[in-house]
Length: 117
Image (tube, rainbow, N blue to C red; front, side):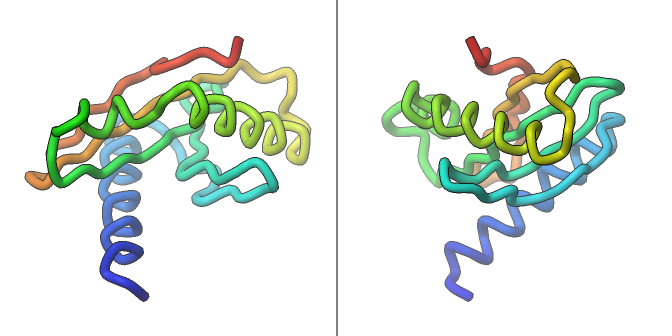
């Protein structure tokens, strides 16, 4: 495993633990399909939450949150639609969150970071 992959897994685990401490329940990690990958799929009550985890060593160019641009959002939405269809959850409410992590391991959790519309 590369250093980058190991850091990515550790960052996802850190965010997962943080969100679970705030009452979310894990459905799955790293849902992959032809449109991309969703880092964490969680439940927040009846809502299915799709979480994009971003790590940035520096805040140049807007940092981790700014890196989830319109193209990335479209891919996440398509991957989420795939997940919902495969798991027969199409009628459940959904939310897209971004969890940005810096080198100090501080988590900036943005609930409802973007919409599927």
